[in-house]
Image 1 (cartoon, rainbow, N blue to C red):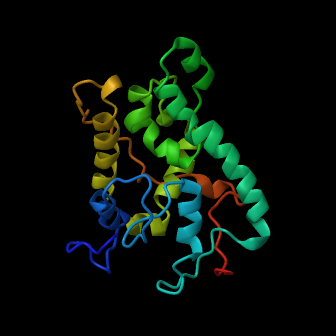
Image 2: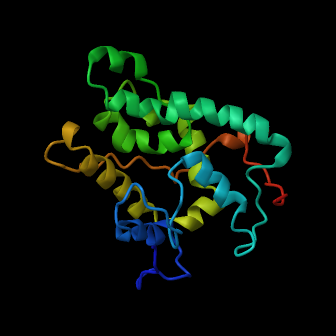
Length: 210
């Protein structure tokens, strides 16, 4: 049965502080037990939805990133993003044949863009161009990177170091010695030009409807 771990505070600020708990659960595929102090899903889409509203009773939020009236559209777009973009870069980077690689090379959108120069360009061989060579995508990435809640939630240097350490250190078959490069240090703090697109700037998010 799952129990509390001494070093995991109920006031933990980061998810990683609670996910350490899973290493304490004895691996038994047939076991059934309540899960405490741990995420109970490894499906990213479900976790995103959980963060949006499941903890409102404990941490009230004025932001609703999954409004009821837009959920059908959000789900449809999310499916496309996951299959062709989020998972697409892994299909590219972890390909074991040339044909697999040729069919999978394509990377877009923020969560991928913020990692493109840091790891995907070299590590996953998605190297036609770096993000800095795409002015519109670079400015889009800078806008999200400079969004106040994003700025508040992370240490910038640690953020990029973590990206590099994780990818270069966890895929031994394609980086045998686990060498972590120092660069390229693309600067996302430079002022972006997204204000020229009146409809493209980040909106004021509605109050959570759940």
